Length: 257
Image (cartoon, rainbow, N blue to C red; front, side, top):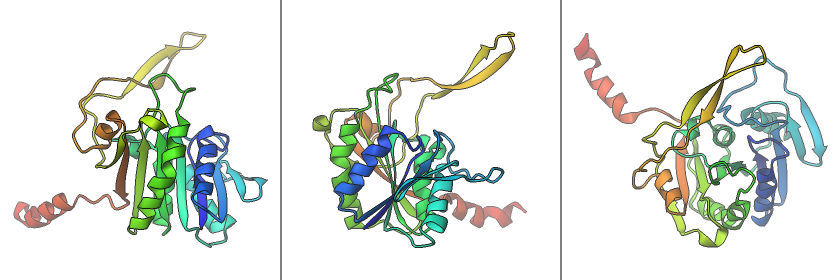
């Protein structure tokens, strides 16, 4: 099995080292690593259209791209692998969970999504950690549990134009309470805020920040699974069409004329 690895935290991120060990434990016969040169967190599914993509070889089957996770997957499949698709794309392991509305911002999820768009089975992996505790991420939780989760997903199959978003709870590996197949959630409290600051000349500038607030996650959601100490497994579709709204608009459009 040939596995392509990428992430959004950058090519030197510790989560990428964990991801490589996860891929090896799956019995991959070839692992190709193509990751952003620098941290690309929050870039979502963006492409670099106004800047050139710089490719740097780090070793056999190891590359850094001056671009986004989406750029990395495109560069890997169309250039580095010369159109030969890998068997699996793994994106992560992200520092911090990607659940609820996070998935629309996440470069980690976007890397897996680009794999799905290009016809490759793709899984995004993220590891939750405690508020303000970025240096104490329980990477061993993802490393211990991811191989079994990935194997079971692959055994059941990933439908075309679909990716799977996997989030590991902020718990030691031995305290994970199970795996839950769940829906993408929605927070009932604001997450983002704008901080106003001032430079040396007292001119204002602004920084997007995160505001941790207590919320009540809906049962069956990825948020609820993590809160209960479970691994959240959520299939996501590339097609964002709202089927119910589509039918409602189609049925009532002419009547509005």
